[in-house]
Amino acid sequence: VEHDCLLRVYREGIAAIREVDPERPIIIDGSRVGNDPIPEIETPGVTQSCRGYMPFGLSHYLAPWPQYKPDRLPTWPFTERDGRTWDAAVLEEEFTPWKTLQSRGVPVHCGEWGVYRFTPHDVALAWMESFLAMLEAHQVGWSLWNLQGPFGILESQREDVAYESFEGLQLDRAMLELLKRY
Image (cartoon, rainbow, N blue to C red; front, side, top):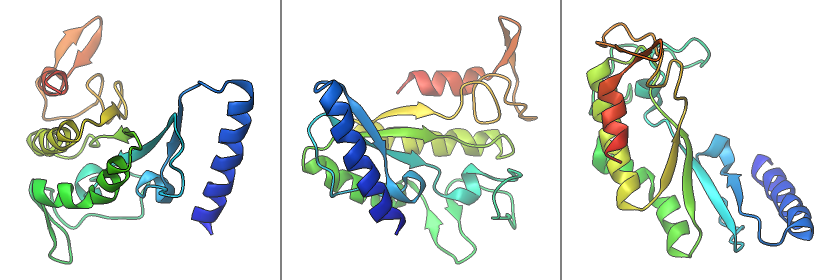
């Protein structure tokens, strides 16, 4: 139902935008909170946007809002409760539906990704390196959620970071340098 509803809304929205501005770039989110592409929409000028939070137990460790409650400190590679181990190869495998979409000429963007502040810094950086390398290999642009705040490079409130002062804010230089490499 969610997929069909999104499909209808996107098609109507794209048509309405094209009536006003036929050349305007459009970015649509994937279904299932941006985790699945929408292969039925292969419209010129429309980019599909994915998310980058897998494995969720690593990216959202101790975040207060999800129902998922961790049973141990995350590591990278990360092992789920069911024994499935995530590493760079599994990230690549999970990205397959998006690669398939790209192979048909649909541009892909990762519109939201990151690691919440309670994931150990070294684990966050190691996962981020794997994730960014995968996106770069597939020429996928990205947007970190967020630059300032618990997923970001500024004022993240991580307790295991040696911050440097930047214009009155606390900067995570190691994370910034990692992002700059990609």
